Amino acid sequence: MSTNTNNTDSSADIESTYAWIRLCVALVVGTIGCIGSWSFVVALPYVQADFGVARGEASLPFTLTMIGFGAGGIMMGRLADRHGIVWPITIGALTLGCGYVLSGVAGNIWQFALAQGLIGLGTSAAFGPLMSDISHWFSRRRGIAVALVSCGNYLAGTLWPPVIQHFIAAQGWRTTQIAIGVLCVAAMLPLVLLLRRPAPRHAPGGHGATSGSGPSSFGLSPNALMVLLCIAGVGCCVAMSMPQVHIVAYCGDLGYGPARGAEMLAAMMGFGIISRIAAGFIADRIGGLETLLMGSVLQAVALFLYLWFDSLVSLYLISALFGLFQGGIVPMYAIIVRQYFSPAETGTRLGIVLMATLVGMALGGWMSGVIFDFTGSYQAAFLNGIIWNLLNGAIVLWLLLRPGRRLAVA
Image (cartoon, rainbow, N blue to C red):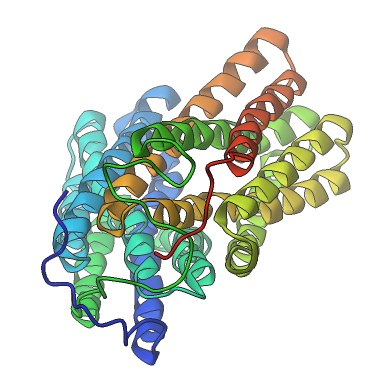
């Protein structure tokens, strides 16, 4: 893979004042750009009513959004590896603008779904590539830097839904979609000008980054390590998806109503922000793999608690704990990729791993529904999540115990 020829040889900017300013700008860009991950959740009932389709058909646009997000993560990551972060964010902003405008004028659900695929593609630039980019600007505090930038996705999920709901109620979903597209272009393009400085070519310190062709620091080839990380990503996210996708339905089945489930989902997201920041601090002290293993174990504990407690108060508490335990898991893959692969490949390889986590989310959400239909209960679905979580933990633990594992200079 080609490296970014615009990179500078100096490491003077590592953890400099500019690096922290860049981090803040990246967080703002991520919070704006990741609106595409959440807007359709709010618009779903209005879109369904407008097009007069069943709930299954109305859910198709979300599927295409996630497909666009996953595939776009790889494409945008490769673009960032070759040319820096400016091009992915610029293309992402313009794609978001086009996608939202096209969705606002769509004549049927299929046109709307295709437009949502573009929105997912544009959104992808505001997540993985930003984490990859900021990892080059920090060494000693790389964990917290990556974690903070990753919070843009959760902040978007916290801030935007009530705003979108307000404007849909006041102006209609079509006008709101078009307005979101204009906002993304108008806000993100000026901000990207603050990210033009090329990343330092070599960041001192940290765990070892291997070359793209030789054996990794685990005594494995880079591609073999990638496969293991992808399987681990599927495992943890199949487990993660069970409460996130089905908590509202679960509360409805228990007689508490969907509103209570939505509140629990909001609690997961809120505590997930805390988790991401805390995980970043911890990763800077003990390492990304170690922090990932800790998060995996704690996530399994929370899933286990769901098996035994289903009172309203206990579900609120367990959901908050689940958010606190799982929020820091996905950003750890960015840190691990940066530590154990060539810096020139960070964006592309992180995009592939993030794609695997999205596959896990999609698989887990579907699988939990099938298990519920077969058993008539979510108990077996929670148990299924625990089993997949154990797969994740086993892979991470095996990597940590590898005799060929070593630390080196990034």
